[in-house]
Amino acid sequence: MTREIPAAIAPILSAKRDTVEPERATTAVFYSITNCQRGLAGVSFGHFLIKQVVEEVSREMPRIGTFVTLSPAPNFAQWLKRERGNAASIAIAEDDREALAALDRPEWWKDEELVEALDEPMRRAAAWYYVRGRTKRGQPLDAVARFHLGNGARLERLNWPGDTSDRALAQSYGLMVNYLYDLDYIEKNHEAYAQQRAVVAANAITRLVRSPVRDVVPVSG
Image (tube, rainbow, N blue to C red; front, top):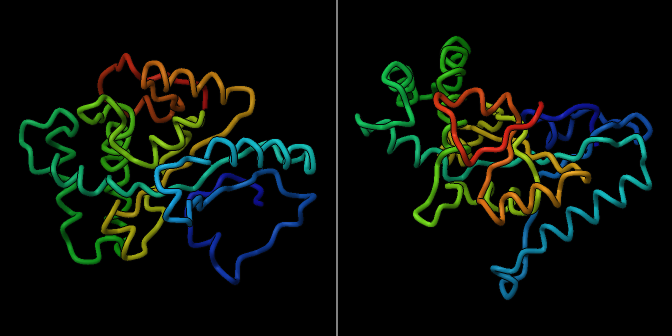
C-alpha cells in the first residue's frame, strides 16, 4: 500500500522503507504474480486473482482508489539490441540509435548525466516496443504485457530506470512499467485486447510513438 504510483522497485522492497498507515494509503501495488505449481503452468489465474483482490480491497479500504502493478519488461533488452543493430529499423530513429549506443558502456546506469541524456530515447523506444511491437501472431512482443492487457489492464506508465539489479539490467536495461486496473474498464479493455489485440495505453505513452497506430487505444492519463 502506498500513497502514489511507484516508479521503482527498490524503495518497495527495502527493509528500511517508510511504511504507510492503511488509512492514509491511496494506492495498492501488485509487484509479483506467480503460478508456483509446475502442474499449473499455462493456466492463468491472473484475471480472477487481480479482479477479486481489487474488489475486496475496494470494499475493505475505500480510500484505495488506484490499483497498479510495478512490472518487469523481460523481453525489452533483446528487442532493443536487435533494433539498434538494424540500420533499417522503423522503430528507432537514427539520432536515438546514436544516443542509445551509450548503453554499451560499462556501468552506464551509475552515471546520472548519462542516464538523463538517455531518458527520452529510451522512453521513445519503449513506447514503440509496447504499442507497436508484435509477434508473428499479432500479439504484443512482451510476455508480461500480454498477461496484463489480456486481463483488462491499461498500460499506464513507463519507468526508467526502475530496477538496476543485474537481472533487470540484462533483461530490460532497468525498464519497468505500471499497468493500471480500473474496475470500470477492465471488461472493456479485456474485450479490446481479446478481439483486436488492441493495446490500451495512456496518452503519455502513445504520444511518444513517432507515427499513428490503428491498434493502439489511447486514454487520458
